[in-house]
Image 1 (spheres, helix red, strand yellow):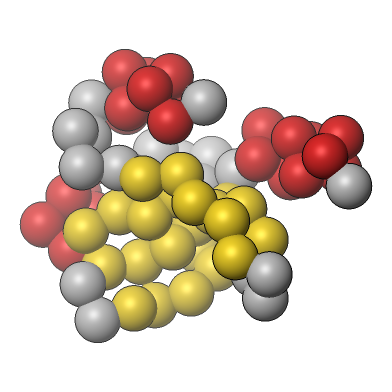
Image 2 (cartoon, one colour):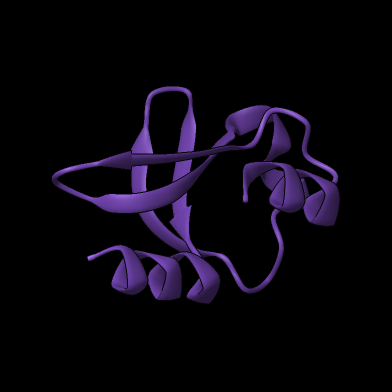
Length: 65
């Protein structure tokens, strides 16, 4: 999933991660925020960038749980 999102957005440093509090999210560094796609919904601000969720990640999260 991470490789697919990197190819779709063109952001090489994009990370797809999971934690128990926030679930699945995509993390984008501050230097790449200008390239963020329109379907990304902001979830959390962190020191080095922002965390976003997409409809595909929400769907995947529901399948996993």
